[in-house]
Image 1 (cartoon, rainbow, N blue to C red):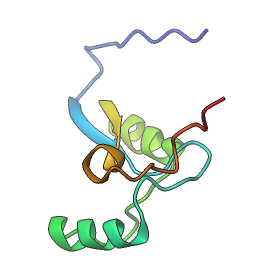
Image 2: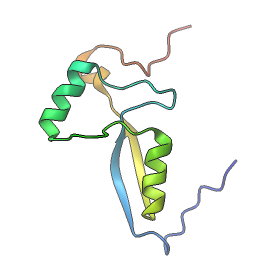
Image 3: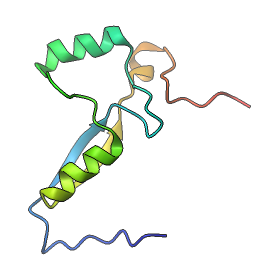
Image 4: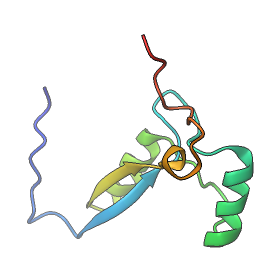
Length: 88
């Protein structure tokens, strides 16, 4: 298991609320309709769905620690998201 300790003296910041919009398997958290609506609402354009690895690289390059959450559209819409595991 990797050492997850943070060297606080080397960090420039801690981003305490980030969202992963794509799972490690490449599945988007939002339907195309919700993704389009969120783009308009947040005025966000360009490469909006980086992979987990791209997010990690982005923060490492800047010496920033990040707390990453999934996007919980399922809770708000009652529509299962693509990250949900099928019931056994």
